[in-house]
Image (cartoon, rainbow, N blue to C red):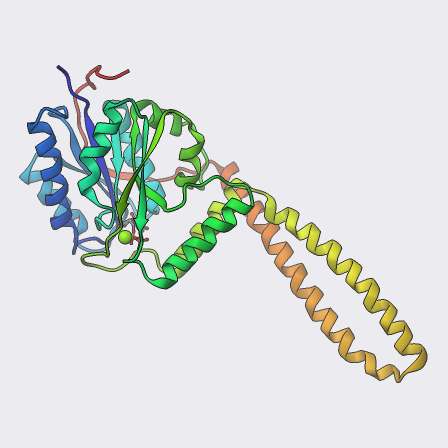
Length: 325
Ligand code: UDP
Ligand code: MG
């Protein structure tokens, strides 16, 4: 019986410290599944080099020489994690029955991959890896993540808490995902919108075994802002409420000033005047910057620029076997 062909997509940005070990672990998992006749022989691990500045690409080339199981895709420069995932899916999706995306540092437990495959075979198009234990993340990282998920829920964006980018997608789920053409990508927001039979798989998140996080605070905040403004205009609506509140408050202040002018020393009002001036100035600037964020987004979208540019593509596969669906 024909078995499904799986491609594991691994985004890599300056991952020379972890890559040899990660490749070994992932390669072994795939090989075992092939040998036990659970996966097609052409199942592969694809490393997407997102414009690394270290030895990542030479290491990928070396891996390619070691085993036909490994192949690489190289961007012309750094385009970001989400685009690396998108490129991997776009390139391998048409010739794979299913793909799995996993970070190069293996913080997401690769040992649940066989179970992901089993759930795919049981009829699921989407298998979401969900962290049920984040004790290995710093307190700050957990706090920011919780705040972010909470905020997203409040503004009406359905995210699966503690699901990042460790997931399996069937071929038809990948091809549906490719229909989303926005330049600013937030995959974990889009995937739950795809529909299809979906299941969650819980695992324990581990600390990075080597190297450093490629998501410093600035990048993380940027990512969060992207997530919010890609899915909701609630922040713009919030500006209106703040505006109404402040206008009402300023009526009250006006009244106070008037009374003060009539009965007190007029110079007294200077403090309240300055305070409200600064306060209103601040609120206006926040408002403008939020609107600006959306305008910037529209600007980026209408230009229709490519999400990524591929410099080298070493992925090859024969026609995908007609297995499931
Ligand atoms: N990554 C990438 N491009 C980037 C930043 C990160 O491809 O611009 C990859 C990185 O190599 C890793 C994954 O995205 O495989 C997640 O990054 P990291 O582990 O540094 O993030 P964290 O786990 O700290 O959130
Ligand atoms: Mg990581």
